[in-house]
Amino acid sequence: MAEPSTSASISVEINGEVYEREVDARRLLVHFIRDDVELTGTHIGCDTGNCGACTIQLDGQAVKSCMLLAVQADGAKLRTVEDLANDDGLNPLQQAFSSHHALQCGYCTPGMLMSATALLEANPRPSEDEARTAIQGNICRCTGYQNIVEAIVAVNA
Image (cartoon, rainbow, N blue to C red; front, side):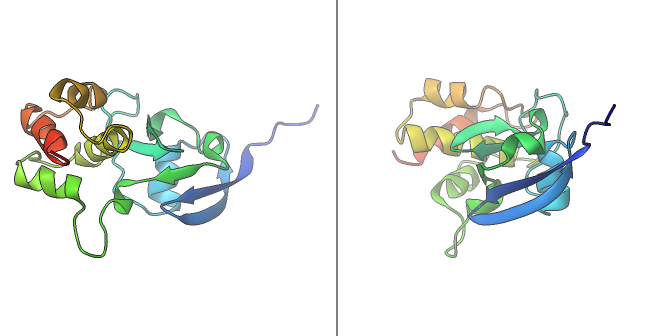
């Protein structure tokens, strides 16, 4: 009996750049992003999909990268928090987080930003309830969420 393959070749586009790598078939997408591609803005929090610190966009949808294998992202377009800022500095959402004091320790911030970005791309003028729904999979132990919600709503107000 042949032994099953323990690795696979994948090709993913991350923040507009294509990465082709041989990966262990069991490698989590979050570890691929952080360790193999060295984009460390995506945080590892719980490794169980509960905290949302590892949230990225996969083909335009907010997903928790600790809940996916790297091989599942083969052929996908990924977007991480590193893609939000531009040559001029912070993007409007990042600036709103700063202006509204929507971060303290900052550990959850990349995941919050990616969840909020997905919302704002689908709905540029969300209500407070829609903002709360969009970030409900992201845990923050510092801010109490109100300033985060205010920042999201203020972006295109």
